[in-house]
Length: 129
Image (cartoon, rainbow, N blue to C red):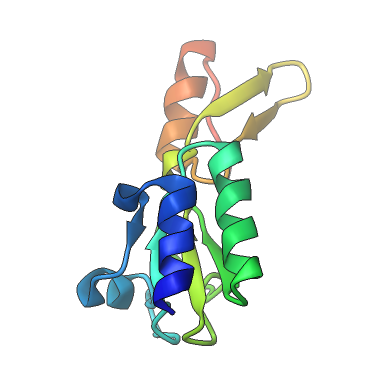
């Protein structure tokens, strides 16, 4: 496993690959349940880094679980095996485009409802969720 972690660190930098037990335990939980503890939590801040992390993880035989803005109640990002990484996508939190005519927004995977509402407020709009 250490070579897999080193591959991730080489691709993204050591500060973006966290392996301490407390962080891994936090990222293995949702509001109601816990999944398997991942091998690492990886925090990319660009699309290129996401691609590099996925490439390094899958080459090493690690499953990839993507986590967007934070905790949920759906269990959607919980790892189901230890040989995995959780991609913490909070660093990709930009609102890329708002189409006021169609009432649509294009956002990155880590964008929260609060981020979106802040971008919409100057237009007199709000997110309906």
